Amino acid sequence: MKYDVIVIGGGHAGIEASLASARMGANTLLITILAEQIGASSCNPAIGGLAKGHLVKEIDAIGGEMGLCTDATGLQFRILNASKGPAVRGSRAQIDMDRYRIYMRDVVLNTANLSVKQEMVDGIVIEDGEIKGVETHLGNIYNASKVIIASGTFLNGLIHIGEKRQQAGRQGEFASISLANQLRDMGFDIGRLKTGTCARIAGESIDFSVMEEQPGDEPPIPFSFRTDRKNFNPEQLPCWVTYTNEKTHQIIESNFYRAPLFSGQIEGIGPRYCPSIEDKINRFSERPRHQVFVEPQTRESNEFYLNGLSTSLPTDVQIEMIRSIKGLENAKIVRFGYAIEYDFIQPTELYHTLESKKIKGLYWAGQVNGTTGYEEAAAQGLMAGINAVLALRGEEPFVLGRDEAYIGVLIDDLVTKGTNEPYRMFTSRAEYRLLLREDNADMRLIKYAEKFGLLDRDFIDKTIYKKRRIQEALEILKDNYSTPTKEFSLILQEMGEQKINDKTAWIDIVARMKEPTKEKLIKLFPQMSKYSDEEMEQILIEAKYARYIQKQKNQIDKMQEMLKVKVPEEFDYSKVHGLSNEIVEKLQKATPPTLFEASRISGITPAAIEIIHIYIKMAQKGKV
Image 1 (cartoon, rainbow, N blue to C red):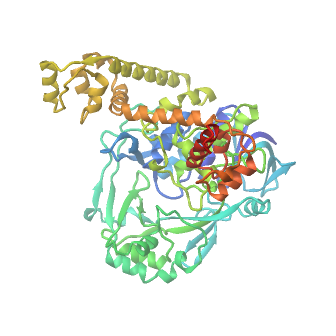
Image 2: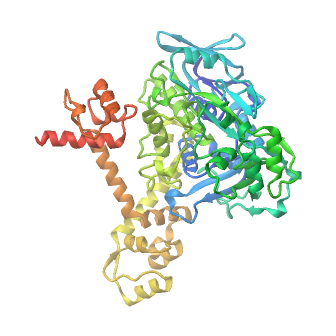
Image 3: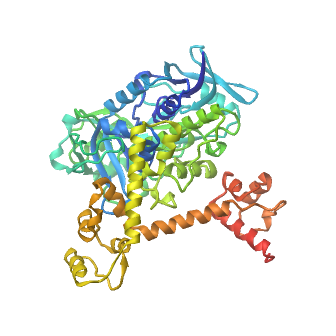
């Protein structure tokens, strides 16, 4: 049968890819090994976190499903770094893993233009360097001119629990062996990575009375901009915190020789920032304890996830280790922790659209591109789905810049730098993070949702109206001034804010405030009372950081102008001091006509572009 787009894999990447494709009008097929596992959360029962929350907000703003599903199935909502500046805050939610999966499966099965097949893809069909479809283990051939591989950890997946090994893509599910072998044989730059998960404990066997309770935020703030914030009041469940101790560490250390991570049994590289408990004990031996977050997996609280205790130790060691922890002395393990190795493609093999450079029409998205995390996967799936449809239509590709979105940073890092460990999004990776906040993702990206028809007209109009109102308010603050009259100085003093000594723009008065609030703003400037609470949040943030935001905008303008610069014909990169031999070799081979084209070459960093730009300008002035 003929389709426009085929998506391989029903995880977080595959869901967003197939939904975006179908919602844009393409006849789409999602092929997954088990239909009931569409949307399954293989590891932790949570969505979001620092920087990852940004990705979810951006996915939502463009028209993805992850934020809505999280709001519908969330058990607890928190803003991380709430006491810090808005650029580094991150939304995080515990989810009901069962309900999340069911929600996503139902959305997929009820979306127009989207079909689902429960089969395993054994190979892709290629003719003359172009994708033509896929063949499954049942011998069925499905034709399509665009195929998206979103296979997660299933390509040659190998599970490790102590000395025991099992070929699987997830515990209890088949690994994809034939497809993995075909991709290797085709000459793709395939490597091995490793990730892990924690044991799950029966809720009735846990003593919560000796643990620290960690409640959700009140009021909870939803992930999706489409969720009615005023009426969002889910019943929240607490998480709990306990700690490892010296006995726990002794148990682990005495069994290092049985740990696949140290015995040489595991070849793949694991995530540096999310190590297993045995890796933590090995690397941070001076620490007397480590946090363990005891998190509910479902609203019924039958199982709890031991976040911070990822392991691939043998089952007998896991039992002894877990029962040495306060509150877990009688723990009954429902599911043991394990490590999993899997194949991934080096993402430098991809364009910024996530299309393969080798095979036209073949896209890759998610963990198979060397990333880790549900959020990074979903973001890539959304972008791959959109770009597959745009390519079908013969339209310009959709590539987000590093100055537009965390999604842009994520994909640019992957395809230009590659990765030798599972890539995770951090706020520190974004150069313009004061502009790319969680709270303004809807206004930053709504134009794309509108362009691709991924959100309804009513929501788009409301967002555009909100954006216009906020801009109007900021103009009022910029254009109006106050003088240091006795009355005005007294109001500032009563607020505990610094007095002004000269005629001062309202926006600068807000910027100088220690704690700007809606109430303070209205008391100082009654004209601002017409703005809603939601609008006021943005007005206060934009006004507070106005000078810094403008500085980042100026940097972006400078960079965009720089990228327009033409590279002289027969330009000799070897004469540019400060470039590595590898960068010189790549640029000499590619001969990019502009600095923009140079910036799109894998491994060419922004720093290298700036050095070349300076050299070109100096050469034009005859100074080199």
